[in-house]
Image (cartoon, rainbow, N blue to C red; front, top):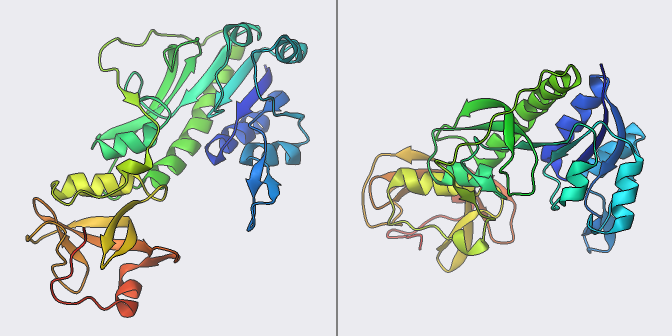
Length: 307
């Protein structure tokens, strides 16, 4: 039995879930997303969110309230008479009155294996901390930060060649399928909930740009995971001959030397233990490029070093 749903989401990550819910026959009464922001080449045009663009194509009403805490916002939300709300990276706090409004509750798709990595940047943090796996979970929302009871989960392995955008894209698709299954179970009254464990709670704090500078003293795998966890944004960086270079993709390599030293003509860089080889990078003010293309334009001198 299809449900009447309110969908709440903002970035690219959210779009597959919206499309899959529609494809499986659920009625989307309204879409809530963040307000358009200035963008374009000169920053003069208002850019709608990816979710708003998708909703407009589907012909679904779009709302972009600045707050959900006003009586007017609550009345408007209740007026849609939704069975449930589906929330995927919306970016705004839902007050208790909003959580209580849908008949069957509000359900969030979160990109981690809760209770590990509650918060804003679970994908980045899982890679940066060297986690062996990640996943997506559907939980029934409460007023806490990702503390609600969990309904369903899917897991995937994190490999050393996986960047944040790679994991993002895989979890986005996996999460869309998971939420569709969760809503099907909810519709037939078979969605089972389980309280989160109080053990293993970690917070995925928002990424601070101050974290992006590479520390070459760390072991090679830690450097690789730091680089991949911040790729492509904000991008882990180091300085080479007084110019900032973002490193977007790398691999483990053999070699040793002073941390940050360039070891060969293939951009193998020494770390505190062993080395990495740069695969893709971006010079300040330039586009992203493969290491071989970079070396053709920037021949490195003997003794070159990333700092």
